[in-house]
Length: 72
Image 1 (tube, rainbow, N blue to C red):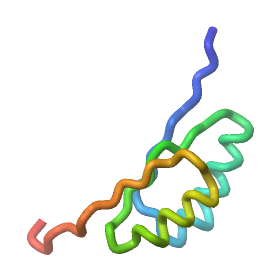
Image 2: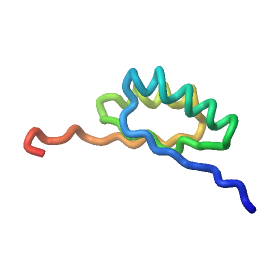
Image 3: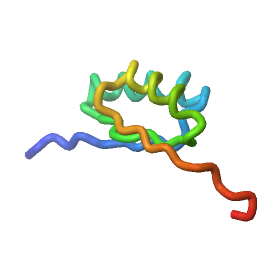
Image 4: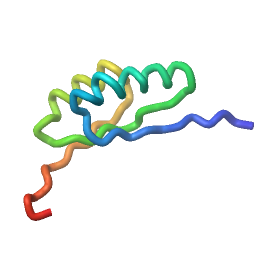
């Protein structure tokens, strides 16, 4: 039977994600083969988020969106 390698997508890369989730993702990648494939955040955070995620993972796609309209 083939080994399953879970793939993850993180929505929001704020201070909590950086302190808590990314160290866990790095550990699970090493121990279980779990891969973070994409991180979604706001366009205004692109430079901060992209530099942070490339320090943790080499092949994570950054997806950057406009903030929601107040009427949403």
